[in-house]
Amino acid sequence: MAICEFCGRILEKGTGKIYVYKTGKYIYLCSSKCENNLLKLGRNPKKFKWTLKRKKLVK
Image (cartoon, rainbow, N blue to C red; front, top):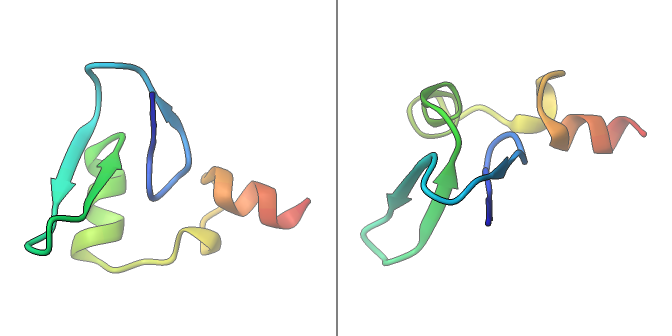
């Protein structure tokens, strides 16, 4: 099982997306919402209340 790079959600096998950089590094994304926020808009996941990374930071 993989973990989404943006929100931290656990992905079931066969779901989500894999983005591969030119360098060969790859990241897992659970939805197009996470894909757009991370790759196209360049947002920080710690600033969004709905991400697990933010919830862990606040605790």
